[in-house]
Image (cartoon, rainbow, N blue to C red):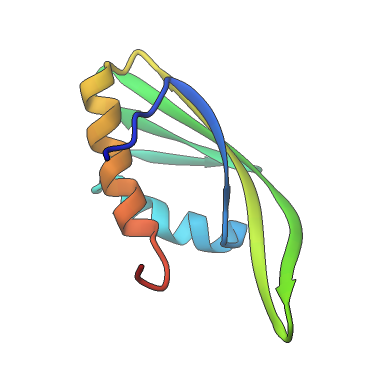
Amino acid sequence: MQAWYEARFDREMGCTAAEIQRWLPGASRGLAVQFEDAGAMVTLGGGTLHLVWRPLQARQIALMRMPRLAVSFVFEGVDAAERQAFMRYFDLYTQRGGG
């Protein structure tokens, strides 16, 4: 089943702010990315994707600690097909640990 991405949604990601900043240029296939204090803006076709993140308490399972970010995605002026294509690639690029 294929995921459907709305124009606005929030998710939790298992990474740090530094990691998402490192991943974004590749995860957005080289599109223009402007970083802000706690977020970024990606120029996507005739529109933009605004990302805002904030750190959450790390998840701990036994001795393992996983960093977490709350990330808000807001697409403006991006049609549904372009949004779906961008997010499918973004999700594959940022996926950790297989599965």
